[in-house]
Image (cartoon, rainbow, N blue to C red):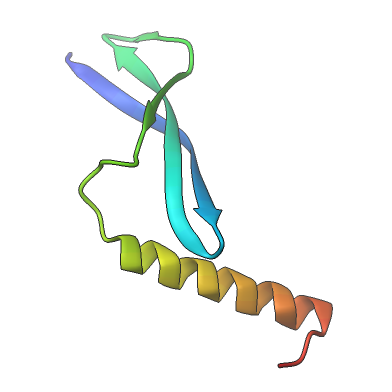
Length: 71
């Protein structure tokens, strides 16, 4: 049995509404033995930063709706 990652959390940091950095927390299953939580930065990972910025806007709209904030 080979190694498998067990993703736990992704933390995404925004600065003034724009993606700044992030971290993924995970464990490794190595032949049935589970490691402690490990982390790796995602700042230089191959993903679309505009998509993350759009996701933040959706989160903000959801929070505004929940709080009764009007534009």
